Length: 346
Image (tube, rainbow, N blue to C red; front, side, top):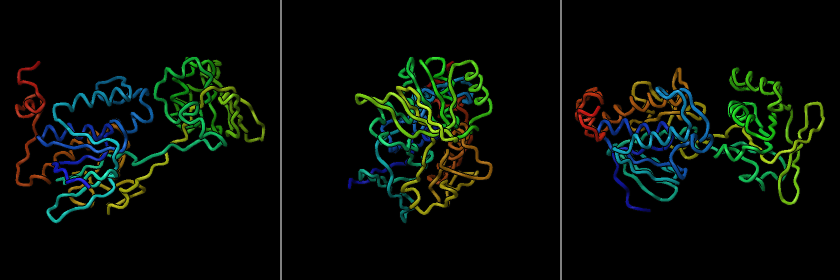
């Protein structure tokens, strides 16, 4: 066990909400350390859909998920956040002095003034293809996320799933694949109606094939996957040629150690108020997909809003005697100094 690192604020989670929390705290002159179990920043954006376009970020008509993460990392550079990757917070305990002791899976210990949990859906694992022998091809020809879309171009693809991720990738890859089959266990899709309509248009135009059923067996030869057998609801088995299987059955989210920290939960989400985004434990805040409150919408935009309000609440928790003023980056010399820009910068 290492000597505890004394930090003003520890942010658990380096997804978009956690990264923007660094920015909002930095504007107030508060420095943060960021802890994430993944090996790089970005959370679900980086792990699950780095090439997927996002259309609802203000002032950016379209932005790739990884691009968004890169932009956020650039934005927070002036604030000197310290990142701790590949470590999971396993213990959080409030001390008598109202600070927090946080210990990670690697034995790193923090003495934090406040804690902001921005852990998305918590620790998550994709729901896997339940077919004998599938594990041997995972990461090679069976994928639960698309790291580089261009790797799928010109190939025979089979996409499994009926939600937004499956539909999005079917629309994205259909014009670029040698052949593409979309497989879902039932006729109705769970994705956005506009996406379903577009997939049906591509199907009618012969750009992709839609099959109702479930995978029952893999077809392989010489150590390589070359297809998959699909059993329809009527019992008919259809063999599909495929070099790559993209499986989007969703995630099995797990809160992991967070569930043991004495925080109020509602269906695996942390209950917070909408003034401070504070949990039932004073000094522990939660933003982004990990929290819940009446009217909660799981949008990146919502996480950014929550980070802004949580920053002021964190400041008040740390420095209750300090008067708070709402300042603007366009006119505040103090904020411009923290950002590293001058007052007359255009």
